[in-house]
Image (cartoon, rainbow, N blue to C red; front, side):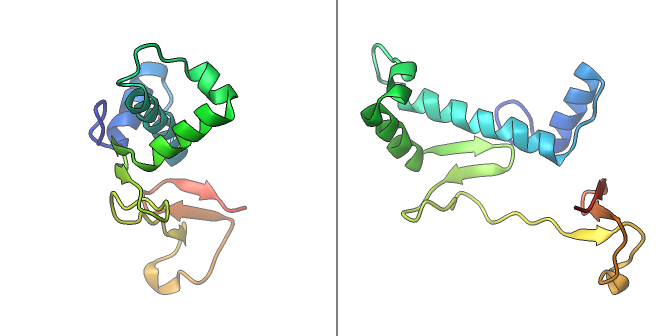
Length: 128
């Protein structure tokens, strides 16, 4: 959860009510990334009297400062906490996983495949 939604499903439901489109996992990811980045920008400039992010993005020194600030971020996202270790890996929470199974399969025959797969969340997706 984050400050706006308690779950990805709540975000999808809100979107469906607001714009008439349910969305998918991709929409949740598309929401989470800018929210995380916005938290990063707010934290980076919280004690700066006259912030100028456009100038910082255009200068190597400002860009490096923002990059370093991102390494020490501690933020809550819809996917859980984000916090990076010295190897720049997210150690805020355990790894997420998605298992793709053929739509017509059970766990015992998951090794066979057709052109449609089902994400563990129950949404049909086309294989590439």
